[in-house]
Image 1: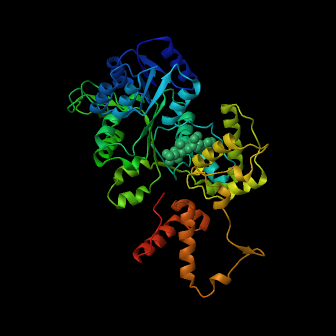
Image 2: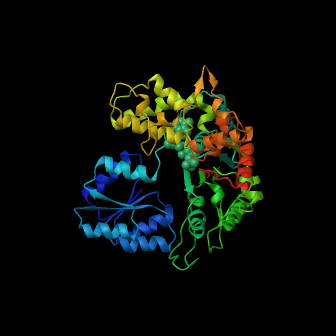
Image 3: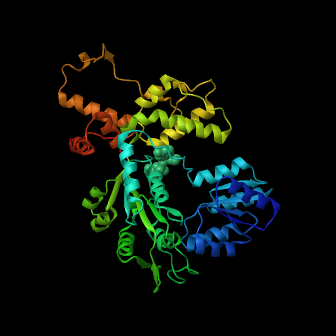
Length: 441
Ligand SMILES: Nc1ncnc2c1ncn2[C@@H]1O[C@H](COP(=O)(O)OP(=O)(O)OP(=O)(O)O)[C@@H](O)[C@H]1O
């Protein structure tokens, strides 16, 4: 985290609080030295005093293609300054003197706090973890695939930890970032590489030194960046944009994907040769529903974590609450479970967490969503189905399950006991027949 402002006790206090919340803090007393720091070492979050030229600083960040969230802050600053900062692109305004919770929330809003890893006892997750342990010591690239929030970054961090590398793991989001901005972010640039490149900037690949570079959603890389990355992997060196000097590429590459990269290759949006290189070691993180036996343990683990962090009593989950957690489809996987438990830890009033305390992000109770199909004497009620074709019933079952899983193909396939490939083929047939299919989650 980079703090920009004239040194004063409030700023020092903000820095101490940020450090207490787990951030590594660098301080700069004005935007110009702050830009120098960003060019040399980057930052995951910037906080700038609104008394500085925030608008000019944000403009410089854009011209030099930095992708870093900026928060404005100030000591009883005039409201118009805060508004101007937000209008110019600052994410939020944090008043000083700082409060511990506000600083922690600001950090949490941009850098997801990683839970302490709990390795479930389920064989599918254990197999994935064993693979991670086996590939960790080598320097070869690793591709971690799995659904949204299933634990891909957690797996990458585990591999990095087990590799014993002294340098850090540097995480870069590839989705939703303009191609030229991401290219600078990854490879850095020399002064004059493009209009606005005022000085040399060290990219994240270089900044990771001999540690690990983690590329989240690698399938989103533009073709030119894919080509550059492939060359860097083969030659173990690269050039900053506009540079003539080779920079050694010493970091270990771990990439994650929640999209089917084979399909992306077929569609021509991802290079096959890059996929082959990335796939030397490949780890699939299973969707949460595939290791459902871990749900209760993970839920208790998160409950303890939040109780500790928020100073609340750790409460047990009732058997009904656990049954509801087990029955839900978890399209957002472990992240969704973690957030669900966080809401329950904050809002539940009883001695233990009951089924009705478990909600989705929109506030709807999980209980209502997991209502099971009508069952009579253990058998599915078939009267309402007689007169309908097997094809119709199958289509309704598939589309209904998919809807309940908010379009998540992997979760729905798991619940239905069919492969994702079969699911895709069925959906293709539906679409060809003019039937609406829920969009992919
Ligand atoms: N085995 C685990 N034990 C404890 N917490 C976990 C585990 N796996 C994932 N989590 C937690 O779940 C959340 C989501 O995990 P993570 O960021 O690794 O998922 P992801 O698959 O990389 O997400 P995305 O698809 O959005 O990139 C994080 O808060 C992480 O700490």
